[in-house]
Length: 419
Ligand SMILES: NC(=O)c1ccc[n+]([C@@H]2O[C@H](COP(=O)([O-])OP(=O)(O)OC[C@H]3O[C@@H](n4cnc5c(N)ncnc54)[C@H](O)[C@@H]3O)[C@@H](O)[C@H]2O)c1
Image (cartoon, rainbow, N blue to C red):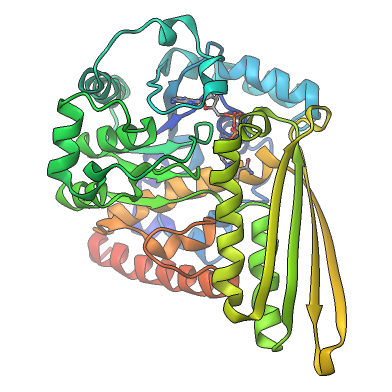
């Protein structure tokens, strides 16, 4: 069945895509990409949801995406797009001018966010409106919920997918209220300021029956309390931390060492980047949250086939959004022969991440349309630290994703009934 056969009026389908961190580089590149593709100005390279087998599903067309979101700085998507263009020459001015109206339309739908648990560096970048707000945790959650309700009402949306794309939060000790929904509710009402914003955003999203995707390493919806709420509200969620560059290559290569019974003596990875994400990651606590995740992925695939690993991320402002990763793998083969493999990855961070944002919004919504509830662990191939399935090998994850897409196809066709 083709996607048009499932839903004859598919072209009219609309989806609210509410981005937390809406003024960021990845968020803006996603908005530029959606508008450019919807108007036929650019092709769909990089979008997994446009692969032949996946595009058979009745996914929302990009022309049906309605963007809005929260941020804690001042600005608007048009300004961010111009800055990205000046720094990277990634879009081309003629393209930006043709979609300027789409970007300007989004600006009024970007609301002031909440900042619990932000790093010291992030606190120094806040807009006056956000920095001067005096509100309890409960009031902050209520405000986020109201923004989502207003968005749905004003744009006449049946469904919203909330995408978490804020700066990485510093890692913190486990808060016991994360263990159950009743404890989390209690902690929110007793104004526990240690609950990070990513958790509060996910809580608010679920309370408003919106799905949630966490593209960052922050906690978001991963905690047991929110897994409980997602099931109670029958919504879907997926995460965490998008797999776009160095880790994508690592999780493709690491299974090869296991399959050939080669022993990795040390795997060292050095990353340098110069965008705001890089600046935030220069804060040691946020840096630790990111690098420990990257190391854990290697160990989970290689198990006893690896001795040592090291991952560093450093901020080099002149590089802007061009992230360079250099990995040096020192390994041992037959009869103890020592060898090395090196790779260098130079990627435009936002151009790698943005198509996955559009894919995830479409796929999580398709999961929901099919009646799925809770964590969509089948989307593990999109994430560095997949929720609900401790499998990091990219080929294994992709096989599971393809199976998931086939199953969704059958489920959605059954729901659509005989044509
Ligand atoms: N390839 C990639 O670019 C990639 C891959 C995996 C994960 N990520 C993650 O995606 C996130 C976004 O990356 P980016 O390059 O767009 O970063 P960015 O710094 O350009 O954007 C982050 C945005 O979040 C906003 N923000 C910070 N705290 C907030 C809060 N509490 N509420 C609302 N908004 C808040 C910031 O003001 C900023 O506009 C980062 O956490 C990054 O680690 C990116």
